[in-house]
Image (cartoon, rainbow, N blue to C red; front, side, top):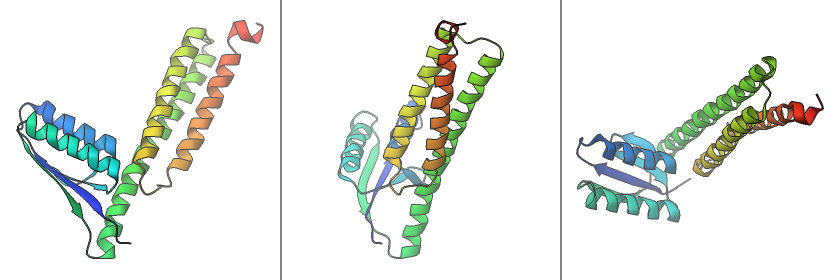
Length: 178
């Protein structure tokens, strides 16, 4: 395949812990996988490189740590395939969690309906949840560099949640004629 990856390493003080948490969160948002503690890997893309360079500058200037950004090319196909599989596994795990969140939303709407607690307020609260899920799915798709298969089940789960929310809405007494 001969892909080029970006390797990002960093070292910051263990205190305050918010520095490590901030870096971890930023790298997770980008879709990085860790080779080991303090060493993350991402596919080589211009936008990702720019984001890593900004993060590197923050680590050095604001956190008084050390950081490097480099390119990495694997010497054999098996290693590259292994790394791509790691990216796919990470996205599929994320997709699975998002599917479960969609299923929980459907279950919540079913529960509210069974309790006859079909109100505009409950609709709005759950519509916000669905909107957050849609945003999270969009972010996961942006991090899905190698097109993990889990997106299909997540898309179906999201569509089911969307349909269930629509049914909930039309069963609100003021809209259903009750």
